Amino acid sequence: MKALIAALYMMIVPVQFSECYIVAQEQKFIEEHHLEKVYLSCYLPTGNKTADGTVPYEGIVSSNREHLGMDCIMYDMDLNAVARWECRDVGGHKLLREGKAIDVYRDSMERAQDMRDRYGYYVYVEWIPRGEGEE
Image (cartoon, rainbow, N blue to C red; front, side):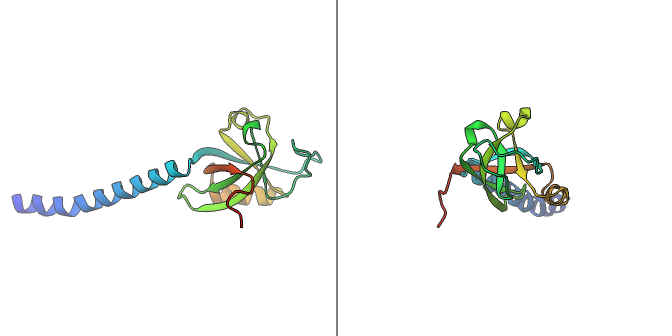
């Protein structure tokens, strides 16, 4: 009986250790890159210019005034880098004003729906100064 328990223990422990290691590595990545988990939404053409006076185009996001003029690197929930956008607009929704959401500009409802289908309701973002890290 002790041999059976020992054999089961040896089979379970490496899996648990491996999963713990992966979670620790993910947490380390999140902390090193100062990633924030935010709600993902999209906005569509309205005919209005952005907060900084730009005509909206795919490649911009809306957030809060603190992030206006910064770049946003978005990661999916598996921590894969998805895209880099410029924050050129501010949103009126409470989550946007609090910096707990990003609103990605999309040219059509189909493209907005595709983004939601692909990435879900939450993503991670990293805010960096405009142009930093670009070649």
